[in-house]
Image (cartoon, rainbow, N blue to C red):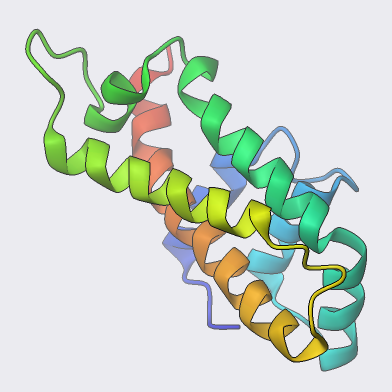
Length: 144
């Protein structure tokens, strides 16, 4: 499922701090994005139990992230309160993250063909890492 770098670990722990230590589906998936899977069997168990619920929770979590620091999507993506339109590249990137989260939320991972579970899991892990790397500096910029 790929290796998680130290900066990615720090970003995941910061962005998902409110759910990281919980047994919620998103908390479990965030920890798996950091720790990986001990075995193929663990991957199947986690995805069977938390896959679809976690993907939907991830979409909800990411969609609400700008609001946690009192910002619009555009302000959050830009990292500052622009007096003009937000940086289009940053907003396009944030919208792509939300779009991937939406696509994953539509997959019924629990009932999907078993051969598609590793692919869905890989996409979830990559999205958690990427979204965290994108959101972490913005959360720091907007935090009091």
